[in-house]
Amino acid sequence: MKLSHWGRVMGPVGLVLLVASILTIFVAGDTWLGMINIGLGLGCVAFYLVTNFGELTGKLTGRGAFYTGTSLVASALLVGGLAAANYLAVAHPKSWDVTKNKIHTLSEDTVHTVQNLKEPVEVLAFFKPGEPQGDMYEGLFQRYHALSDKFAYRMLDPEKEPVLVKELDLHAGGPRVVVRLGKLDAKVAQPTEEDLTNALVKVTHEVQKKVYFLQGHGEAQIDDRAATGYAKLAERMADEGLQAEALPFGKGDIPSDAAAVIIAGPQKPLLDSEVASLRKYLDGGGRVIAMLDPLTPNGLDGLLKDWGIAQDPGVIVDQAGRSRFDSPFAAVGAAYSQHAATKGFNLVTVFPQATSLSTSTVSGVTDTPLVFTLGTVGGQSVSWVEGAAGGGENGPSADTKKGPLTLAVLATRAAKADPKKEGRLLVIGDHDFATNGNLPVLGNGDFALNTMNYMVDQTERISIRPRTRDASRLFLSKAQMGGIRFFATELPIGLLALGLAIFFNRRAK
Image 1 (cartoon, rainbow, N blue to C red):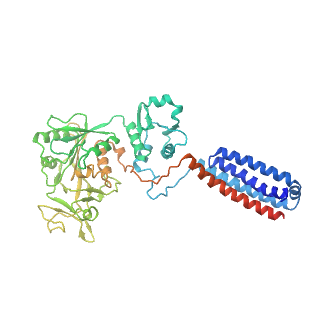
Image 2: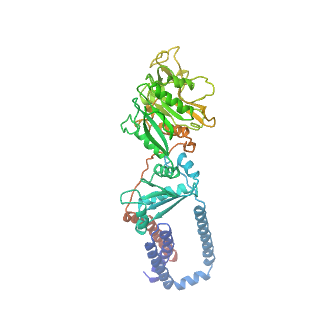
Image 3: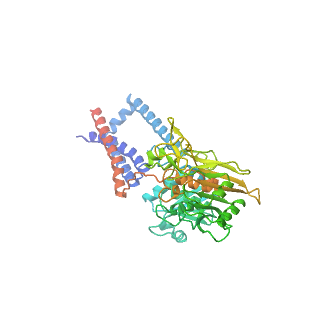
């Protein structure tokens, strides 16, 4: 084959390599391979010019020059349009989450937390360049920053910041992300939305409010990690800026630093002196959450009556619970009032064994039912009370109480000593819904935390919190990533160059 023929083969190859070098450097991020492409491309083009100079001169002065010029102008316009589109995409980024479980969509709680930052928060992430976990964190940080300019982040190389690493007490194998607000900081253990949002809450709630859990009557314990304990609830409360404390009753009045007191399913009746302490605390503007079980005497009937609330005798039977949770006594919270504590709440809650609640008019007290079971479906009763008034697992009797049944009631009243303060009593017809075994079920955790936050005046925390989402991730080594880049860019480029070379060579014959 003549040198001119080889030149006509190498010319298109050189042009393709030059164009490919731009993609290799700026898209694939491989500078060295891009420089190799530039060198080879220039060599091929030079070889073409030397071996086909006479032919090229004739083409540039002939009729083909017009068509060549037109093609070049069209190509320039196309490249310019693509460049403009890329500039707009960078200057005004927009993304859509098309994953099945919406793993890239931030939760309502996160959006609310970030958009309501009152002071600038800075996140420091210590990762070497190219670490997969660092890339995951940075992608998460970018979504947070898009919500508010008060969320800023820096990706730092730990080897170049030894003083800062020591100052923040970071260690190999431990958390390498720190959220800072003034002198406060919180470490993030995992690259998840839940962990990052919880860290934001910790630094923005400098003073934790104390919530006391009553003890001594068989209540659920906040340090019990068994399925029936409340350890998981205590941990979730810490993420909300709430400090769970045990309260062994019998020591007199309720502590003055109590933001709220929780009575979690007492199995024995409270003493009259203990009820008197609760009454005094509520009259002074205190907040009490009573989670009461059906058919279990608790000694609180008189106190509840003063606030216009009563437990219906018996236990709730719910066909929705029978069909979905394999238990006729699993009461399903399917509807919610438009009160501030539950407004917009649309998650199902499950109360494994619940009592129905009733309200009556009491002067000065405002009672608001918050959660309801389903009433009827297709003309058939779905929920009813089984107990002293009749009823059974297969259907209600004529005189039994039928759904929709009330599962939670909030009662409020102005404090006697200071009318500007408001005493609040929240009664929930079951305590098992918040145990370690049931807190993660559907909306149970969100309902428990939202109502607590309302009771202690942290209404900004009332929301739907981020869930741990399963995402399919593939981690590749640097060599594997290089191989993928090579075959994704160089192989198509090679085929294009070969095709152009054959085309121009045949055309020249």
